[in-house]
Length: 250
Ligand code: PGA
Image 1 (tube, rainbow, N blue to C red):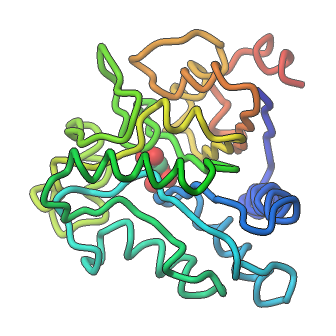
Image 2 (image 1 turned 180 degrees about the vertical axis):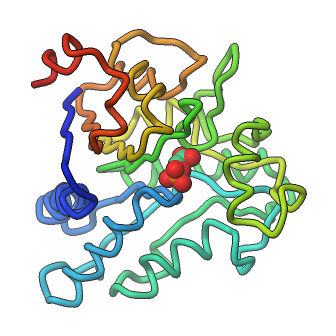
Image 3 (image 1 turned 90 degrees about the vertical axis):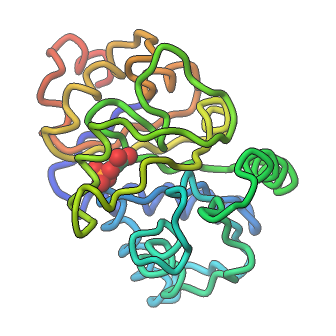
């Protein structure tokens, strides 16, 4: 696991965009695993800037997103499909047919989840998976629990997550109570993982991840099982890590 602590949002956006550009340069039809939430927005803006400057070409790139609320229509302005279109896809030359987000209106969610796993296999796997992290240590919608699901599945949102995400909805009651999400095994099967964390609200979860211990009460801690993970943070997100832990990553 590699830890990069940056002084500014701009540096985080640049570093993250460099990692994605590197993957795209090494593979014309790279498969980008993408995440929603407020954290990756500056990095997506930087990717758009580089596309507009003629530095990046997304025409042959494919993408798979981590998760989607359930039930929620793709044209609902709170859906993750809508987020991706508005933050990234509408501003670059990616073919929308090559972008994939779990179907928030799937009639048969368990069949849709199995089909999503099959799709990832058919694409040849994920070259780089971008992740945010919840204050409670969730990645995707893999919430703290006694057991975790390995593959894409329908899950219940915890009260913590409903509360944290209510800021995007008219009221807490409007937040969907379920989601379709890649599982921990799906995430760990990506060739590279880039987790971005900013702000003190993420400090406890990041301290647990960097402690190296594995616990299902902090699903992100399972990233310690993967050999190519970059944690890209600001100073606030590492504010609960002790000197010894930080020194181990220096
Ligand atoms: P945030 O969400 O980027 O909006 O903080 C991250 C997450 O909950 O995974």
